[in-house]
Length: 281
Image 1: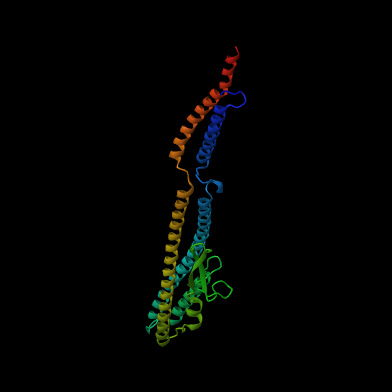
Image 2 (image 1 turned 90 degrees about the vertical axis):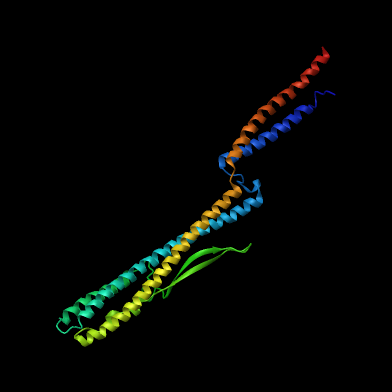
């Protein structure tokens, strides 16, 4: 039965064309945004997972910044500790030369005094952003260690927690107080006494420099790991939400062809009622 009021063919063609246009719009969105899941309506479960992971990636960026700051702080202290070791070696040489009878002990002591002042200057200057791991008071507020955020840990659906690396002060300020604890050299006897004291100070300085070096290496390795972990998470997010551009390109070509055919089919269906006129001629 033919009807001028209800065109079944046109309605079918119109619904088909609407479906094609909807798929074409979605494909064009994927190509323009580069994402298969750009919003919650595109896939709520995958979108929610990707947003949680994106928040963790942002958290790891903050962790990396914290590690970089801590690494710089420890590196400055480590460089200062190594320089203190070098100056103590020079003082040790002067003390050894003072154990001889035919030397000017006053001049040697004057030379040692300059190096003692140099050690104090190095300890005071070995700070980064207000934190000094060679001092008794690390941050000026009574802290004896430096806490560095090192990781963001998540288990199941629980809220993430942070982990930290703690670097204790080597406290050269108290343990290597040459101005107070080093015997002044006036003769061979006091030179021998000073030599023993300097050897103890040198051991303390070497142990402290080694400890800071080990901490610096740990922080550096952790920072490298966090960077790789963050990159891996970004790859995972991309696998969840990014569009396959090769597939989208092929789909776009197919849908454009379907759209042209759909328009032609609708045009043909719209012309069908015109044939009814021939029945009245």
